[in-house]
Length: 273
Image (cartoon, rainbow, N blue to C red; front, top):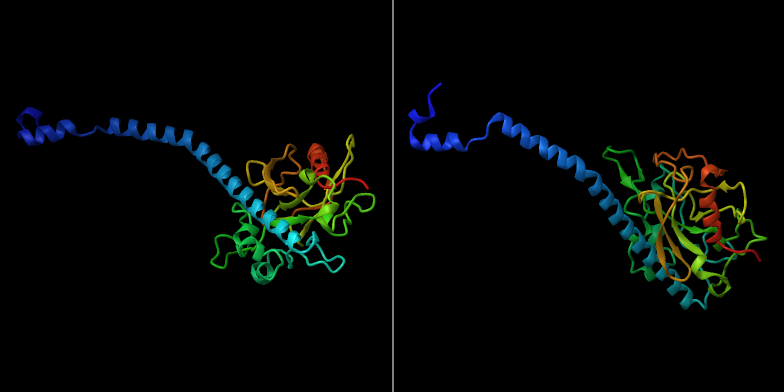
């Protein structure tokens, strides 16, 4: 090995400034540790940002819903066909039909012009549901992840009677506690309505009919009849079913450890007549 002193001065400086293998390994190890500490925080921050955008989408859709009612003497769009009222959006969803990507269901809907002709607000940015499975080239996102409460149709699952359903904005008893739009679970969503089987306060059992989404750290977006939008965090594990994006989720099941969630959901759906 040639002594450092015998080398030309420019080579001596280069040798003195070079990293040893051990120093490089130490630096790499430090970077790996820092990345391991930061990545979970970055993932949570990204999820939170998606939740904020989702909440804003719900707010904009709720504004469109109210503007429509203002223009039609307080009459509301329906979540399913009832009394010849226009349905807020047509078309069902699954994971095979090309109709899932047919934007005309949105653009021909009664709320589209009131929503600034924005297709984006009909879908949560965290929803990956599509026709064709990742990472195939035919992967095409579905057009919608949002559903409307069945309290705005015939309320079959509530059921109605004894629970109220609403056809006019003035009929709503507690607007701040009556959700209108929700991000539905991608394996649960099918038609334009999301069903809740009402559970009375103090109930010991309950059913989950349709499942809400839980994209945002176990939470989902809802917008309410008074105009506000929120991200609600679910408590139990049953209601936070993992999204598989294949439609294999069983519906109308016992709430189990999510009884508290169904009680909250019921309290914010409608009231008895």
